[in-house]
Length: 155
Image (cartoon, rainbow, N blue to C red; front, top):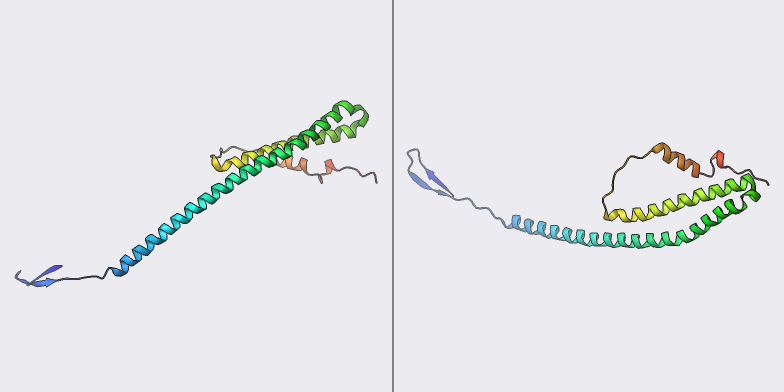
């Protein structure tokens, strides 16, 4: 509301401006409903995510347990072959046993990595420097197609 005066300052009247706030209030109510709906969706999705993480942990523990028993047997037999029969299997046999033992240790590290990875959703990840040359060298040593690991066929 405003006062209207003439040049001498005498009161001439008043003006009043009014706005219809119905649409603005309707939009505010709609926006609040969308916000509430989104908050509910976020809450539901967070619960689903937490359930998925828990299922991943259970699966990881189950897989690691199921893999460790045959891995330990394989490792034990390879070590026994090397230690007890090394003189009878020759240099090639000892080399194959050493590769089996090395692969079993790598698989054990991978299993431990699965368990560690499954726990990362609940913890902050520590950052560390990685020796990429070593990672590449390890990957190449695991590759059966690598020329130094090719087995000569007797057939």
